[in-house]
Length: 614
Figure 1 (tube, rainbow, N blue to C red):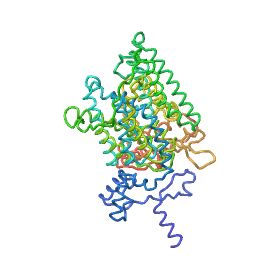
Figure 2: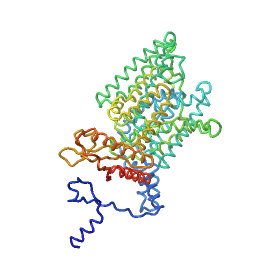
Figure 3: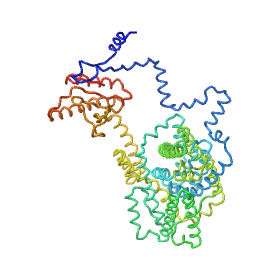
Figure 4: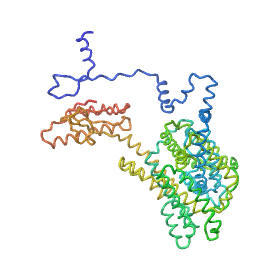
């Protein structure tokens, strides 16, 4: 093909480019047309979209080109990952898991007794929830580092929501049944989300909202512990800070017990000092891990020999001996409490999932291995379903225990099995020894545990980076502290959705200017030295253009143009805006509404005698 023929064909495909009036007649800029993608079958296109949405990780890839027996083995390993990594297990890994398991067991036993009281349940139910669920998770979970058991936030949430339906003292049997029902539906919710690949739903709760919610929950939990810490007998059932502080102040003259305060304050100081040592030197990670158990042993011995319980120091009293009894017949499968249990279970299950997945991803990234979020949901759900049938309440991944598990050198989920075995021995032989354990020490352990949930550094970073995220964080925080856990959670979810809607319906646009001594154009607000091109307005759209934001994009561009025209009129020796360039590189998609909006923009600009190029 000769040169003249090639030039003729090229000119037919070219679009006249933007240039100055002086050079316009002498040269033309060549822009290649965007090729039209090949037509696809509607069913095939829908199938591909569905696959990319729900099966982006292509979970069936390992099953391709395999025999039936191999597929069966892979299927078993998919459901029970222990059969995959268990083949490579050795004594070296067992040593690490044994040390980690014993360490987290020493931490979980006193915590579980305290967390059960947060949920308004008898102490043994906390221990039950650290016996069966960790065993189930060890077989089905894919994380090597998560330590399973009751956690403070979920315990508080469950206790608050259950208490709104039934009195935990006067209606104790029904309250426990409703707790098991909520745990059952929490597990069903988690399994459903994992099985149907709906794990992305938990991502709608933004990081900022989680930081605020966790911080508010930590403050609320700490305030609730003032009852045991100060030895108050009559305490408000409400969780907001105003009601709690009013109850504390009202009982100051006759309700506080100085022996209880002395025990609580001294051991809280000891726990905080142990935590300081652990943070100061990572080699002493075991000090804050074993400190709660040491505190329980020492305080129990002190109360026993001094009979401080006769002086008004409240104690745990009897913890039922023996392993988990069956609770299958206690779950509500009909009646009014079925829907109440379902509602509470869904909320508790979602919060438990959010915490566990966040913890799992954090430690998976630190150890550089992949964590299957959907598989985790199925494992967490299965353990809660089984747990609900064995007298357990909602269990999930605990950040404090998981951090200790990680630092103690855990290699696999066998550390959870070791912990479960220690809890089993505790239930069978040691629980009577906790009879004289003061409530004050349990309050101190919980306060010490939840302090770490208040992340001031994260809140400060949110303020520096994104003010809207900071507002979401503070909204969730104050919602929990001044109202209730449910209201705080509702605010957190609402603000997260509001941010999504705001970003979708009001995408960012920016005016671009030329950075000096380069051919690069950047946002003039981010690059103050960037200069505008006289007579030309360059606008960048930083989002896909959909039906929800197409009119806004059109109107925002016209507003930019009006603002520039007003500036030109006010200035001297400035040419009027003759050309508008819409930079659409960040626009990843555009629907028919977006196309109609751009057509309307083009017509508006024609009336103003402004040429447009995109």
